[in-house]
Amino acid sequence: MMNERWKDLIKQAVQEIGPEDNPSKEETLKRYAELIVRECADLAKTSQYTSASSDYYDGFNEALVYASIKIKQHFGDA
Image 1 (cartoon, helix red, strand yellow):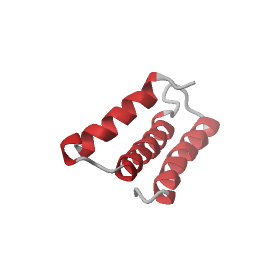
Image 2: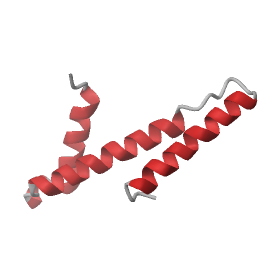
Image 3: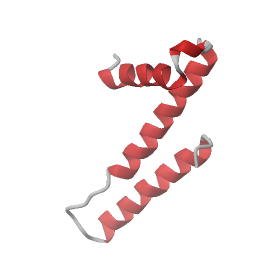
């Protein structure tokens, strides 16, 4: 089941390409995929624990930042 965020990203992809340019399905899907990848990478980076501090949480937070960077590199957004 699709939540509202997916629908928002589809609308955003169409708006950013510009419906007046009559984008192809491929262009729209490419932009949609880019938005999903960026959102996933940003979610990983912003999911850090900020209220707790210990070696465990510090390592966890570093792993989230690393995951964000690797996601962007893998899909060519870094």
